[in-house]
Length: 116
Length: 114
Image (cartoon, rainbow over all chains, first blue to last red):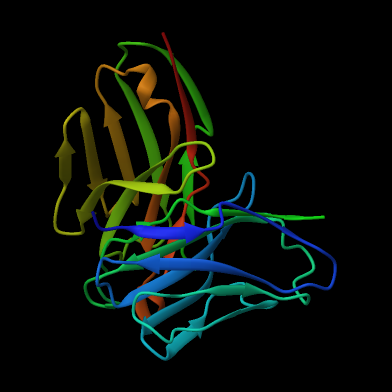
């Protein structure tokens, strides 16, 4: 059964600590995305990746970093530089990153990050 | 910059009622529009995707329409059930260089009362 798996479901961060959120997909999709969702706001794009070893900043990349060493995996690190990290983080993927024919995005179940 | 608005922010209806959720967008040069459902504490589930060349898409009790020229889409839910209670989001790709980047509305929170 294909899909996107995010872990952990809940994560707590101490002051000055970096934490990494996992996102794995078995859909054979080339493109992957990270979004942040805050109460009462729409989803905002943090980073996206078109293909392995390539990624680009979205609207709110400051304080975050990503890597794309494997097609299936797109981990997100929330660094200590992100001063307001408490939010719900969603990972998504799509078949490709097409400008002419944007493909539907499929989402994982999210990770809720809180500050201790 | 594309902006997406969903009205109302919340809606409560009795079970069995037909209802319409609204989505409007400012830049009509979109390639498609996607409707999602989000249950509390969960990720997004894609419900319907309408290509810019289409006017309607149907899936079971759901029907989504798209009017690009007026910058509007509606999601019609027939014979609502308590299991339909969730937040419904619409999203459109950007235009030009950012066309892969989805812009989301803030959602409509639907409650269907048994």
